[in-house]
Amino acid sequence: MAKFSKDVSSSRRKSRKAHFSAPSSVRRKIMSAALAKDLREKYNTRSVPIRKDDEVRIVRGSNKGREGKVSQVYRKRWIDKDRKALLERKNRSNRKEKGKEATNSPDAMEE
Image (cartoon, rainbow, N blue to C red; front, side):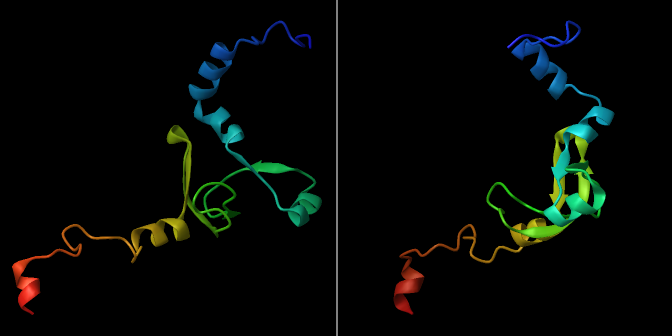
């Protein structure tokens, strides 16, 4: 496949540098999210840049399939935070607490 434009480098190294050191205005475009099928037809576009208060469905990672509202978009760190996923992560009840593991201590044996 031939290069289309001589002004743009096809070097992996240069394109990765451009991607990860992109300014906020470019990162906005990169951090776009695909629209649901009904919204695609309504707005006649495939994806839009993500914004605060957008309703999203997580499609990758441990929170896959979860729906929520975007509370913050942090372009510098490539993060968009979902309120519901963050709350559930904080309130995880099945987490082991430090020092609360079952031990064979003399106090436990007497009772």
